[in-house]
Picture 1 (cartoon, helix red, strand yellow):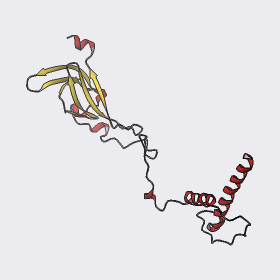
Picture 2 (spheres, rainbow, N blue to C red; picture 1 turned 180 degrees about the vertical axis):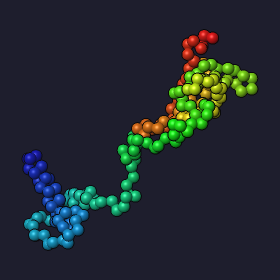
Picture 3 (cartoon, rainbow, N blue to C red; picture 1 turned 45 degrees about the horizontal axis):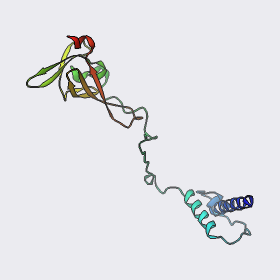
Picture 4 (cartoon, rainbow, N blue to C red; picture 1 turned 30 degrees about the vertical axis):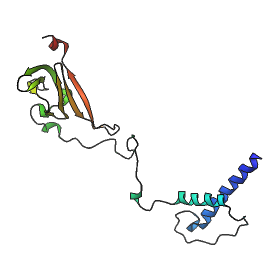
Length: 183
């Protein structure tokens, strides 16, 4: 009994597809050849469910009218059409500004933190040029900015250039080395 129902359902779907292909110009959907007369077939009158199948198949086979009609909804995932390479770097290696604005966060080494009356906490850092610099909250570096200074660390907000991540920024914490903390 189940086998006959399955065979009947399969036959209806095959006939609906054949009917759609016969009605399409050139014998295929989206074809450009003129339509030819199809041979009459002996079929039973279309039932309500058969018409529903034929209508849904027609909707599936229709192409979008314009590229603007398609919208991608990432739902927390990255866009698969976005380049994984990312944009070009903003500054060439030989064109860095002098001092902390020209340093990458990874190149900075925290040497100490000083508390002042007027400015609060100020961090003393060593740059890649092995010179000492003072940085404060809000100071910019090449790939981020200082957002917080604690008595034993500096927290940077770093720009992330990774299209596989949703977040465009991350926090990087530079802590005092154990030798510097003992002094």
